Length: 302
Image 1 (cartoon, rainbow, N blue to C red):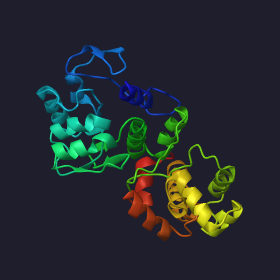
Image 2: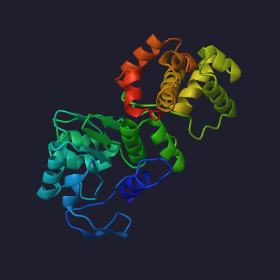
Image 3: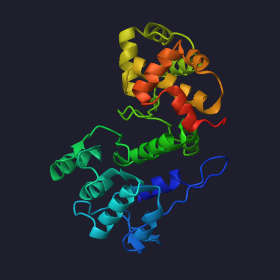
Image 4: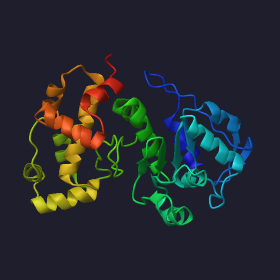
């Protein structure tokens, strides 16, 4: 039920300039489906609905240790073969693995079942610590609430950061969490931090990206030693100050590329990279494409 709720919320029809998704739940046996919380869910669509889908997400199911029906595996394989993006949330990865779609690829699933996935499907490279793993036409995500990370990544990848951020705000979610992957990841933010000084310093850093922001200055503003600051920072954000700032600068650069006509050189200065060459090098390394190519794909000003 959680998986169905996550995808239905993320791909809801919102209007307000956001993409209009044609969302549907489908199953090999349409009708009443009993969920893990005991509530029945009426699913109207059969597997024929996959034949026209641009995105197919395999959701968790209780009996995931048993491979899905051959008709399900055939439908997943056919969708992938015709060019649909195929993804899996949590133990939904077992369906993709059974269909052979994860062979020779990296993948993730709920950490509790990562060992089982690796044992059952040795041709799959399982990454148990990742929130999601993007392999181009196949994307897998971790368990439970990490389904939101998976879906927001898919939105960011296809529609850009501003769309993903807008939907995350509507869902009252942090728009980005560090999933350990390089493709179109933005910056992690401190969640439920009890350290008001640290929270204030990070808010100040977001407003001053154009400046050099050495760790020593951030620690001084937080009234901490560098060592204490680094320790509390890691506990709050799960990453280092350098990595956090780099992700923040790249995320802000994405938004400016999408929503403004500012020259790349000016954007580089505005987010603290100093020059277009430095921005380009970081963008290519961590996003896989140069800034101008990203703008062509996601600009809202053209």
